[in-house]
Length: 332
Image (tube, rainbow, N blue to C red; front, side):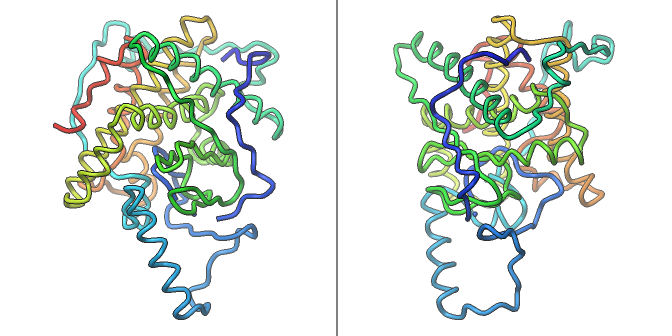
């Protein structure tokens, strides 16, 4: 992705040197980090034998109701999920679809300044995130203007280790997430390192896809999808919540694909960029994560979508660039 030298968003809040805290409404969770719980700046595990007594119970009760107020089920967090939505098979046109092995591109080229899409230091990471966020702002401002609407740009908070949001506290183990309570995207960039080292997800456009997906949740919040989902889930069983959660997440993937469509129209994509995003979508599918972490899959617990679904819905948005193609029938 040709991102260097482009405008950076002014909506970045960099609190990496001062963050500390735990949860949100999210699209991604760190694969392999399921079940990790951290608190404070030290990053130490919380000891089960540590004291706290009645005061600790009060804090937990307050945290529980704060999360519920944001439409988040704390039980989803304990299960390792970042939201909670069940697979519905969808099909796409395959004539030029890179998901078809016959059409898959095998060679990748990079300009010398791209260093294989890897960011080398914190300043460069901030620049990259700022540029990607700015590109999403331009795309969604344009789409909303075409509909005669104003797009309220979200803030993106870069943190380290842990953070407190309007939806509660989140650790690095939560992965990137969007909180509708304050309309902010939260990102610990160590998530990118985890994807690279443990899951073979490389490239700057794979990282951009992650950011664009979370911005997709913001768009859902603006147009009323998340508020309605959070209202309905209160009277749903966990299985029903998971099923709807999958449809919400796949729509966010499709919205990320729409952003990729316009980014490509501007000539910013390089050979291999699309494959990077599709590989990321494949590696973080519910089935792929469950196979990798526990050796078997439980479809009834899926809340983000299978690898195939995530790839297909991202590609659907990328191929069309149209909101009308992102109807995942969230509410049936």
